[in-house]
Image (cartoon, rainbow, N blue to C red; front, side):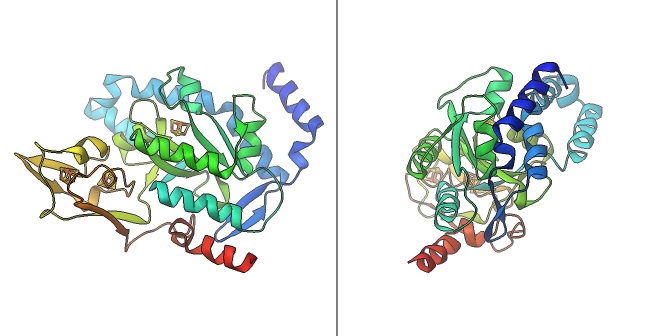
Length: 302
Ligand code: SF4
Ligand code: SF4
Ligand code: SF4
């Protein structure tokens, strides 16, 4: 640890926020996050820009991304990092449901939401509007607020408004957690395919993103075709849509459930529905993301 980092750690200890109350997720409850988890994640946050720069360096090498041997290396590298942040891909409505759940559920005191210029942009010094799109939540809000990277505490309404702006801009939301555990959920990311490291790695390796609790439905009888519309081809970064001449075909097995194709579908051929085989209830329950848990908590609080 450098002298600078040591002095930051000392000042954090002195400021005492390591030992103040922090909020974490535990399936359908909020729980207190202890100082050990907080300190480990703080250290990760401190070194995250370096990790992201290493990832960007790897993906910038054509001999890694474009050759057979390089691809094998990339796959092995990604498979060996299951404890780094993984994201469950969600619609804007599901991300908002998560925020409502946090607001409506009683739990420890502590910050809830902080918004900042996202770490990938900060680490790679590549910027794109909307710049402030990294919404750290729960104990993550406390950590990044204190990391001196430009994060500030925001209200739930400000957080929702940012999510909607990101949706319009075609960014994909992911609820990210470390160590493959929802107890380490700390951020709702809104990502593109040029800067965002987890998304870029997913597109090369199939790692770092999980499909969310919703999936798109496609009604071919309503689709107006590629020439008149074709918006779903552009909006879907997962290539779940293909055009055969003017006809759009939809591959549900590639759909991650981001909902980006729905709001811009001219023919109203798209709608989200609940995914039957959502596999991440033990990390972030579908009940939270589909709004049921938040509704229950709000009813209980009345
Ligand atoms: S994962 Fe996406 S939103 Fe999160 S820090 Fe990286 S680019 Fe920003
Ligand atoms: S098909 Fe639609 S909902 Fe599914 S991943 Fe693509 S843009 Fe997102
Ligand atoms: S966005 Fe909707 S109407 Fe447009 S091409 Fe795709 S499915 Fe058809």
